[in-house]
Length: 334
Ligand SMILES: Nc1nc2c(ncn2[C@@H]2O[C@H](COP(=O)(O)OP(=O)(O)OP(=O)(O)O)[C@@H](O)[C@H]2O)c(=O)[nH]1
Ligand SMILES: [Zn+2]
Figure 1 (cartoon, rainbow, N blue to C red):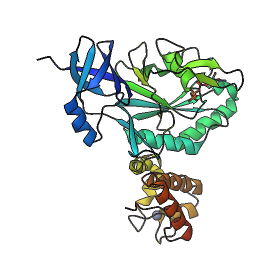
Figure 2 (tube, helix red, strand yellow; figure 1 turned 30 degrees about the horizontal axis):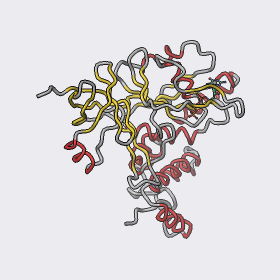
Figure 3 (tube, helix red, strand yellow; figure 1 turned 90 degrees about the vertical axis):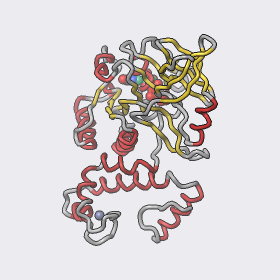
Figure 4 (cartoon, rainbow, N blue to C red; figure 1 turned 135 degrees about the vertical axis):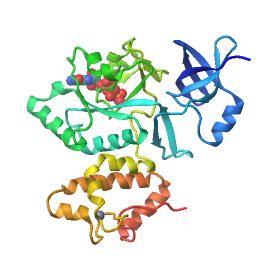
């Protein structure tokens, strides 16, 4: 009998898997027994998993299971049968990249923070392209971030001339630990990843002459290793995440001000609309809570709730909301 070994899953695309075992990249397959079990429980291995298995035919790895996961990044998948898609496991740190220009949006930050907390990973905000703004504009952005996060999320600023990006990220890039970058297109994720990985220039193929946008060379890689031995996961779909129905709890971490106030609402399931004894609305009336905070919160809460509905159900829920029969949040229709 062969001894079982533990490897890192570094690539997954449909039935194709690759693992890293003792610094060696091996093509991997899944044992029939494990597949049978995992398929029925939607628990197939994903990038970042520590998989157990055996080597066969000298340089193949047969995956027979995975270790318990510390974190799990999932996203909503509207057009697939499987509405929730698992993207990566065991990511310790999620770098939320937002650029210091028109792209910056508090609402977007709230959304990414919710996703990060929901996954179990720790968020770190990266304010990129700070070379494009003045010192006072930069201060405004940093103030906005501090306000949104209650000063509880670390911020790294980067600009084109940051000579030592590696030093700025060093404390998060720990050997065998996984990190990832999320954020809108063009905020500079690839540029940063390229500076952090051992072999640069794998991701961006430079600037396109016609539209001035960074373009990617087609690549099959999904995990990159830094010189310090950390893994950066960059799987398709990771860069643009969507709210899922499970995120309501994480939403309360992002909106702790509303959550704290809501504890004093008369009704436990208060939607902070027109219910009597609503402490959240009282705070707005008293001027101690900005109405935008509640609006932002409601927007994401509704998005999370809608995510579990089919396209038809979403339309029905919207009509109902308009008719006022469902004042705030949709409910699942079976
Ligand atoms: N001025 C300035 N430009 C930058 C900086 N970082 C990246 N850029 C430029 O911004 C453009 C987009 O950068 P990318 O790294 O490709 O952005 P991305 O987030 O990976 O975008 P997607 O791959 O579409 O998700 C490129 O033209 C970069 O050269 C920066 O710090 N300052
Ligand atoms: Zn209330």
